[in-house]
Image (cartoon, rainbow, N blue to C red; front, side):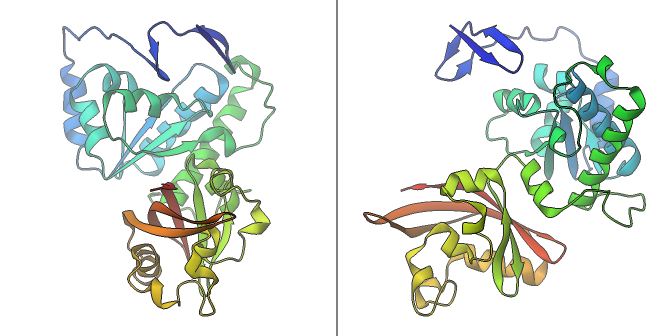
Length: 308
């Protein structure tokens, strides 16, 4: 069996139900320097892994990860050796497993680093950022040699600055967003369904493509709506309205979003069940989200939304 993607046709020997079985020879030797590095980095709150591919997109992502971890936020970020973390169950993999926040900086939509590490670390949930959505370039280019080195470095710097600003981890002074940075661009670069909400009134400012696909809606059908209206919760369409109906009392999703706006505290994996309005009646859905304050706005990441 074969599959065709952006890089052509490849063999899928050992493929089973959407997975490819890979046998990795166990390392016979261990690098003391690598282990010492992992030990020194383990207290840092953010781990950054990167696809590091040999194409243009991978090279820009690789340089961006280095700039982020070694220049903009060296005291807060641990730069992961992807090969070491993937092939050995030692210090590098521990950094990935135990980080308070894990950022997967992917060169493109193939998401090599997060797919690799998900294969050896069960339950991994990195923040996937697709780097080539954060800069403008001729998308017909593929090889590193097809773009001047100075332009590659400029794109890498811009990506690193946007990530540092987005996660509030920059240690150098970044007084304003890099040119072209906007909220829509940010959530589009995150490879998960995302809503961006304002606090008063509590409404959706924008949503990314993944969220629109999940709901089967266009952007104009979610902008300016309350969260329950976006999800089509039946209690969002009562006279009292979304968040104010008596049935909304005790809704963990609503309470989590309110608390994030009020305190700035993020909430991870908040779950509830909703009665969703459908053309043929009402269907029970399970919903799980995570929330995070971004300036005066709140980012709502939809981790699960499906029929019970």
